[in-house]
Length: 474
Ligand SMILES: Cc1cc2nc3c(=O)[nH]c(=O)nc-3n(C[C@H](O)[C@H](O)[C@H](O)COP(=O)(O)OP(=O)(O)OC[C@H]3O[C@@H](n4cnc5c(N)ncnc54)[C@H](O)[C@@H]3O)c2cc1C
Image (cartoon, rainbow, N blue to C red):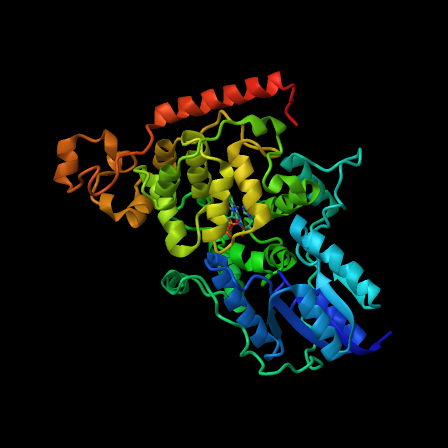
């Protein structure tokens, strides 16, 4: 059946034409389709790094749509109201999102549009499975990754990709392509991202091909070495939906090394699944006992961590890579997060907020899962007593100090033996290599052994408080 009037395709985190079920279906059902994107928070005085990516990705989408993307800012409901009247829209199409804010907004909009006799059609475009499709035998959601992963494999990972539709019947928009405002983060900050990244879909696609040929065969061991950088770096493309996860699965199928890589894509799936089933974990611990965790407040320590000035070289290298490039290697995400919420006893939510501000791939679901995992408070989290030691992590995964030297040039001249722990080096050796601790590079803000003891004591305290309040591990 073909409806004669105009359908609206509302783009959100699906900035692509290929494998976009909402767009394809809208074009099948209507003689004309209007493509829309609404930037809901244009007045943010200090926008996050990811806005830079999003604006470039939107420009690229507009190019793929031959300019026919209507870009609006502000309240979505007001915009829809106006557009529906102006363009005689009879139905709205979108791909589903699963975080609590989007679900609440979409539910309200669906009811409101229904009241005006506007049809709403939503589609699965962000994940491999709908979160409610995979449940344990007793009907409850999985809380542990490995059984979830096995259930995904047993079900079969979908790699059916919808080809790009014919785009001849898009509604012409006024001033095509020229309307996307570039209210990006501070210009100097964003400039550095442009030197490192190209947010166009085709570049992501080329990177995927290069990764499959060169890096995926060794991904299972090289993915832990931050200096090697043999990871895909596809996270920002996946977050913005420029590449669909089904396309990535389809491209890697049967290629050497695919199993380990696809397992990581299933971690992404699991993160969205967990947030869907337990939306409170966005800012509350999954393990109830952590409500009693004695987090410290220490703005000076938090700032030192954010700025890569903790005096612990591997951590500082990571935090500087994050600030300067909008990216942080997964091993470093774990190491820096662990220092914050274990040795420094600062609330994981402060760290998660900084990541959301600085990462180009900032993603509510993946970020929340990652932080709760490190903090020990999440589903299937790392046991609290397993505390990453940044010195031994450095000696293991950055043995020749290449990564630290790249990001902490103050220490570049130090021999491998001392590069991960300059405070332990003899003073004459430091002087001979031109390093004055406390001057060229900070003294550590926390002594690692003492920080570890304090973290374990805080954990015992939390358990005792939870036990006296009769709260069990949930
Ligand atoms: C504290 C912490 C915070 C994190 N915050 C984010 C975030 O905001 N956004 C984000 O996309 N990822 C986040 N991650 C997960 C992971 O670190 C990144 O996805 C990965 O480093 C991105 O680099 P890549 O694309 O080269 O990954 P690759 O190693 O090439 O992996 C391929 C893809 O698999 C997915 N993936 C890989 N590892 C994970 C994981 N542990 N959890 C969920 N998905 C995963 C990502 O989509 C990634 O692009 C976080 C991890 C931790 C420990």
